[in-house]
Length: 259
Picture 1 (cartoon, rainbow, N blue to C red):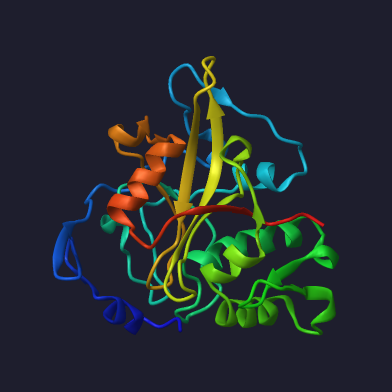
Picture 2: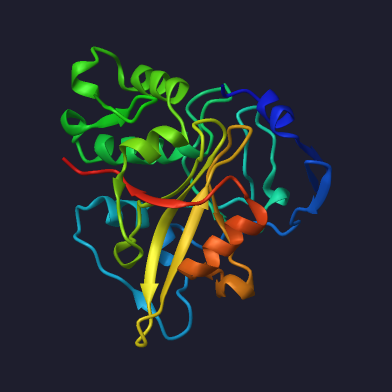
């Protein structure tokens, strides 16, 4: 169920710059998102590395081209600016569709998948998953685009992406792919790879973003120095970051299969 009360159910309360989880206090960052880039693909890669290339019309290239907000705001569905809760590189310029607590972590990744099909005039191939991970084709729904998204966001979550998404390996990780955390079908978390770079030694770095609770815009999480380089995560660094700050279960890698 996607309501703000889920925070209380999980034992999480936000008090100013502090996040309280299970009686423990965690200090959230007060740094604001940088606003000097117009799109994800303009964010400087770690020193000595360069962006990995992908086919021009692919989902990965689309994700890399997503625009970024110029102002340092991260809005919830209630129009609250919560940018100071995160250490962010930037916030995606993709406003929430609904004034409801719907577009949380899993939903926002579905939203980006949907935007790709809409902007590329591929809605005849667009699908999302039901709760159990079964594909639901938009063209067969008889619904409007927005209504289809709303129904999907209400009825599916991170578990749906875990069940329906394609299994992938770390070596094949690319923009648009997902880190899915959900052990039991209840509360989980989903993060999306937004860009990828590699240095001459074969070491890869990733920009990774997510929405969260309550429903909010997607931000690009800034990697702490111990987990990456110049704000970009290494693969193992992001796993440790999730374990330390977002302990929602063991992450698995998933991809939206292109049909």
